[in-house]
Amino acid sequence: MGTTYVYDYPEMFRQALLKLWRERNAELGYEDEPSSVEVLQGVELALDSHGDLIEVNRIPGENTCGMVVWRLTLKTPEYVNGRDIIVIANDMTHLIGSFGVEEDQLFYKASQLSRQLKIPRIYVAANSGARIGLSDEVRNAFRIAWEDADDPEKGFKYLYLTPQDYDALNAGRRRIVNAQRVVEGQELRYVITDIIGSEDSIGVENLRGSGLIAGETIQAYDEVCVISLVSCRTVGIGAYLVRLGQRTIQVDNSHIILTGAPALNKLLGREVYSSNNQLGGTQIMHNNGVSHAIAQNEFDGVYLILKWLSYMPSHRGAPLPVVSPTDPVERDLFYLSFIVFTILLFNLLD
Image (cartoon, rainbow, N blue to C red; front, side, top):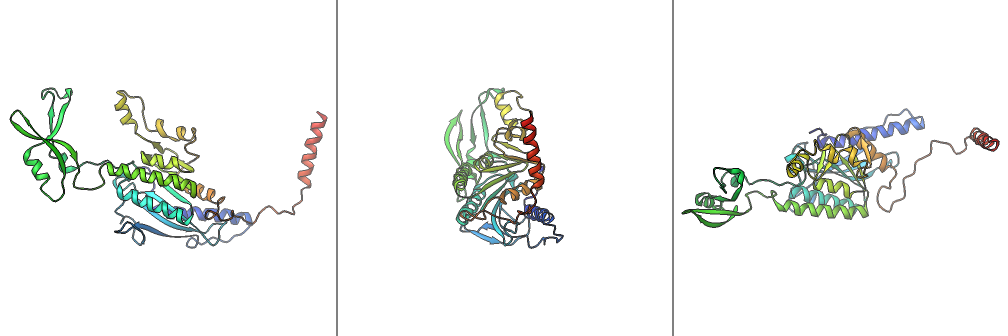
């Protein structure tokens, strides 16, 4: 998909921190190499059976949710004793990074935690928007009542089930489908009115979750530092989330879109857009102010996040970070004064 694997981001933060420390040490004239272990410590957070955030210790890829959260402690040149941030990231390897009920809840709880602790919230966006799934059992059983069976282009009247399929689908404890009983030419049919499905998180409940995390992001905007990094693509609710934040970094060749080009072309009835770049690429979103910076790759984006955080307090209400200046206050200003005097003299002569 052209994006970094989600579990590689903590190490990416570590390497970006090391780069910051090397630059700082070079300014001070130090030759010491920073410790890769000490600059970053972190723990992964997940939901327990009661929907509460807990610390988990698992290897990458054991997650069963398309959202991954960490609480990271960063030792930066401004905060040598460490500062905490909450990192929320989509996992594109799980259902192409789509937002379901569990993903929405994890995002919501993690964002709430950042507000409770008054620490920055970083969102790494690489997703396909809200999950709109299909009920496989209904898809394999439904039939189509055509307006004209010999000419399907005239459209259809309704979707229906045979009595046998209808009874089989609803034989279990959970109702799979609702239907209206009709008789068509002496044939008994069940016209489908509602599809519930045997699995959760495939329907409108995901859209409700999208509203939940959008509202949470609006609250976070007013209370904590909210920065987003867009990798690959962010679609639908993912696009809203990055736009509702305070600052957005967009990786080159990534897209911030509500609807993809193929769907819009189909709606318009002709090929208007050749790619998603025309809708939400960097040349669109950076120029119109939705994204505030462009990064060549994910590492450069993470590095820029850390640079921005260096100007911000560790938590809301804390004093601004201060570092020892590398430009000595007592340095000789004669040369600068001479240049200023020369410029003024030339201006007077003119």
